[in-house]
Each structure stands twice: as structure tokens, then as C-alpha cells.
Image (cartoon, rainbow, N blue to C red; front, top):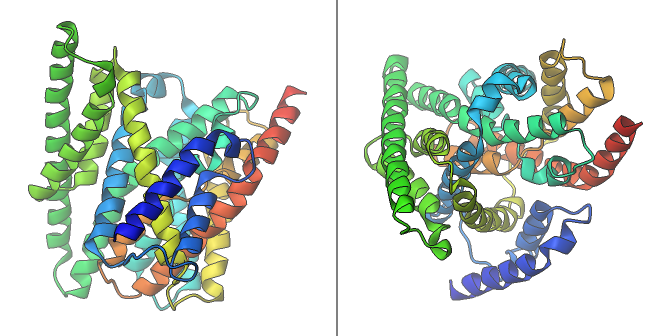
Length: 397
């Protein structure tokens, strides 16, 4: 255990001191993290002693998603989103359901041995996008602002929207396997969502009021500004889970509430939390490389690879084309938006959660998710910089 801790710590230090140089290359952080996991894992040097079935791995994955959900939701400006940003609205409210639906159709065709609910779980796990894998796109000032904003807002909110959908399908699939009623499953999901909303909104309202009061009195200290958001996100998650609700719903709802109520110190508060989130994400990616990629499920076959390719192309890009009809976008802009829908952290955490449910066909679900994420890491990581530059050059002309 101590060797694993030291290995992760040394790697985190090395990466954090060279990240500025790495971000100017086609190789993104996820590629580096997964490659390190493979190198230091059981198939490589054997420095990492990790168990994918262990509670520790699941806890890290859950806390990572909880913090990402909270910070992403807090960063969203819902007033702007409602009034002016039509493109991300369409991507979230129309494109996301279409993506899940098309993913379901592809899964039904390729995996006839899976039940309908298992295919629905797979389609939902691979629907949310991860802007971190295409950071060169969303941070490149030469790419048109509306395209960057659309991709950034979409990736920030679609994982939170997918959480209740995923848990609904999971509950129905689990109850079907246990020959229980679907009504019971839906009631349990409603309870999870309801408790999560109450806990997330309630804690965040209280926390925001406390922060405003302490800020007026001058009690906030810069060195501690990174702590409140992290603590609040974990409090929402832990209390909701303890009360029988969904901690992820609590974090998403709490983040939206907190972001709407806290204005003055919002940027400083979120910057510290995002740094902590990056550290958790680094560990999750390394574990993914060391444990999951190095020991892929035995269900891997040609159908898995075909689904992964379809998921990153047709299943993502066709809904985007349909979604943006009537907005006056050129064909190259539509292709650009459609291609940069990388699958990453949310899909990995969803996989860890689903894997522990032991659904029928869970090995196929795991193999397909792993293949899609790995393919996305490589394809989107290597194309982000050159395609962003090429697209920016075309739009400038």
C-alpha cells in the first residue's frame, strides 16, 4: 500500500510541474495518466497494487464524480444559458436524449444477448462527454466562442443529467433480475432523486448564506478558499447517500444552487475545488489504466470494437447534426461539434458503479465502455490540437 501511495504521489508531483509543457503537445492528460497506469500496473513494473473490486477504488471514483458534478454545475450560468445560448440548450435537451436513443438502437443490433435494460444502461453510460479530453478545443481563443461555449457547457452539465437516467435503468434492470416489480424500482429511484434534491439544495442554501455572512464580516482567508466547495460537495454526497438518496443528484442540484447564490467569491472558491478535482481525476485515470485497461474483461470481441467506433461517430455526430438544424451553422462546424464529444471520466465512474451491480451481461458492458473510452482518449487526444487549428483557420478566412 505504501509503495502504491508513494508511486502515485511522485507521479502527481512530476505531472503537476510539467503540465504547462504537455498541454502544448497533442498528448492530453488522460493519455499520460492511463499510460502511467499501464506502465506502473501489474502488466508493467508492478508498482501499483490496486483491486478494481475493492471499496477503495469505488469510493475514489464516486468522490471524483461527486466533486466534478458539483463544480461543473456551480460554474454554469443558467441565466445566460436560458436566454442566449441556444446551441448548448439544444445539445443538452435534444442531442443528449437522441444520443442515448441511437446508442440503444446500436446496442440492440450488436448485442442481441443483452436485455433491453442492459443496453439502455450501456447507452446512458457512454452518452456524457468530457471536455477535459478536448481541452485544446474549449480553451483555444481562435475557435469561435459559441462553439467553445457550447462544448464546454454541454460537457459540464450532461453527466449530471445522465445520473438519474442511469439510476432509473439500473434500478429497473436490478429489479428485473430479482423478479421484483418495476413499480418498486421506480419508487426507489423517485426516493433517491427526491432525497438527493432536498439534501443538495438544502445544504447549499445554508452554505451559501453562511459564506455571504462570513465574507461581509471579513472572516474568509485566501489560503482557505479552496476548502468550502470541496467540503460542501462531499457533505452533499455523504449525507444524501446516508439518507437513502442519490449523492450524485445531491451534488448536481447543490452545485446549481450554490453557483446561483454565491457571486462575489465564486471564482476563487471554485478554483481551489477544481484543483482538488483534478487530483482525484488523476488517480481515477491511473487506476483505470492500471486495473481496467491492463486486465480487460473477457467479453471483448469485434462487436465491442464496432460499438465503440459507432459511439464516437454516428451515435454522437448524427444527433448533433439533427440538433443544430436551423441555427445557420456550416457543415464543417457541425462536424467539429459532432466529433468533439469525447468519452471520459463520467463514463469510467459510471462503469465502476455498474460493475458492482453485477447485471446480466456486465462483462460486455464493461468491455464496451473500456474500449470506447480508450479509443476516445487516443483519437480525441491526438486530434484536438490539429483539428482546432485547422477549424480556426477556416473560420478566420
